[in-house]
Image (cartoon, rainbow, N blue to C red; front, side):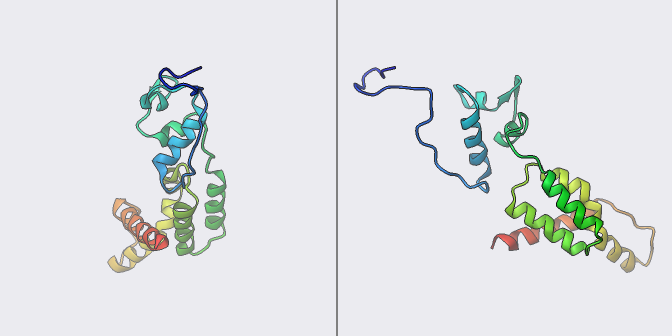
Length: 158
């Protein structure tokens, strides 16, 4: 269909050029996925709408219709490392690598599933320092583990 005021220019409903975006630039990456898969969006809120639900982020929008791969292979890797009784530090390192290099679609799920396993060394150290076995997993222990993961992620990206 011709564009008014621009002779020789025609309009179509297809994308002309789309730049490559690295997954580390997450919101732009997910926006790009949506632009490839959502037919005829007229506004940005239209892009974030699936089944009449408007999502907060493009990532959440991509997850709902299954546009992102699931994390089963990362879950399997974490499960295997955990089951083989690998040192806790190895499990924590694996999680760090998955976070920084593999762009899991739901890192919160992996954390919740394996947080106790990744925090066992911290729990052990706390029990030794307090000279009691009465201490159990709590938010302080998990927060210390998250700090270790955050520090490792920063070092991994350097």
